[in-house]
Image (cartoon, rainbow, N blue to C red; front, side, top):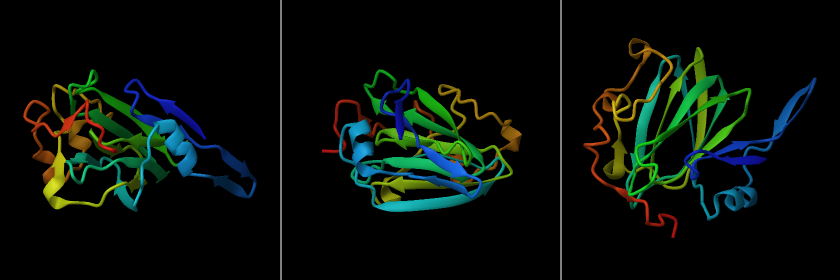
Length: 191
């Protein structure tokens, strides 16, 4: 496995080694020891989730606040998505910046999104099956979001706005400027 820190160094792209031949392929998608060595701290994933969506479905930008803040390790099993992680840690030198990574069933890339980041994705293929691990359970009281179309963020979702399909919840999220501070850059949320 290859672990690559991005321009926002807490976001890590993982490229597993794919072993393939005429019969198909084998890939190791997660290994705790290598993962923790790459991120530098212990992350205890407790749940796996999966969604299937059609082209233009945009899910996000989501996060949970403490005490139910979540890290995510995301990947695409089938199809193609544009995956986005936005730094929402107050005092961070990269506050309000984002990383965009194309994840596909073919490239097998994964993205680690730590606590303190809003996360979302848009489906670019006809359909996509999206899988992810989380290190905390869902909490409706701690569930938050960030506006996908915030002009301050200026995210290029690749598809035009009229091609996007969003939940009502995702069309009513606050902008970065309106966001209630929930994460501090100088706090270790893994202690």
